[in-house]
Length: 529
Image (tube, rainbow, N blue to C red; front, side, top):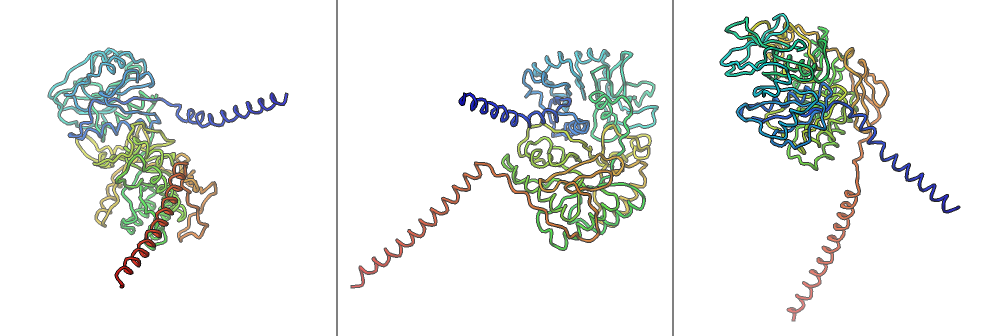
């Protein structure tokens, strides 16, 4: 009886331990319960800077809170599509045909949502769209929207595949008109059931807006016009920027009732220096003027897959340092490729539930690239406002100010002189956008360093659950504790091993020195006689 009692208690303990270790997986499953899409491309085509299209589609899907994995067609393995609810085929280099038989066969039999972007639309894909292929050669095309209110002149097309004879249930977004014959037009974005087609894609301007609308309608079911207003964002702000210009700019925007955001870097340590205190003071003034702050991820250098703990510590120190100076970021801003890297995601991006994803720089440096993007509570698609302020044909987009299908941040580079500041102010004045107001329209967000949890809700900042009153002068509050680095058994082992080796070398050095001294004395005595 006593033995069975012990066995019963042991069984209960085992079951409790299994439940305890299973809990995080259950939570994780709930967090990732969203549509998964596989993005397949033929080539990055970096010679013609076409890799930007891949990053653009990744950011669009992330803003729609869709999990996307990116795969080159040549690397596709049989059976992969079975794990996804959607697939996008992106053609970056028309001369390079997709020849992976496994992908072509499984895409043809795929029952989920499909989208083809670019040339080389196959006859099998056209069958899924219930349409007829129409080849267009040597044409200058005009992209138009509803009622032809907005137009964009596209680059000269040597060849393009358009669709004709669409079924009655087809949904079209925008049209392509031949400049030589405006009476002839073809659909731009086409959706037939769970199939879609975009014959042309550009990472800016009206083409991007209509392509984003097509992707949102197809994969996220946005059948009505979206009403996302853009967030005016000043980028490339640093502690070394001209703080007088930054202060003047924020004051002018505040006086005109224009809500805005800034993306700023900071420095590690040196928070007691007078220069940093002036920088923090300007950031507090921005917060008091209705502006919000995104913490820009640090510039990476010689990173490796083992750089995670160091990056984690840097991000924690950034957040704590700013919070101690009453500067409360509402999210993190980073280049798009950061969300394609496991080390960057796990040790930096996961600290916030709101993200500003910016275009990639000319040179990217991965730590551990895996092309498995994560989603966030809210993710802004960052794009230069200049791409919406050019005139190719028709009225400028910034004057018509159409809404966006996804959360979008129109970015302006921080001015570095009075002339550039005046130019920036004139550019903003000429835009008719109803800028996104973070107080009224930004969702409740949180950014966490471990010891400092910063939240933003309807214009109020919270630090570790307590509402904060932002003052102009440096705050005199308790110092937040630094995050203690996570110490695993391997670190403890090598730390102990290092201590033992240091003790061994010290003792060996002392003994060796003593032997040298004694040996020298004995050697000298041999010649004294």
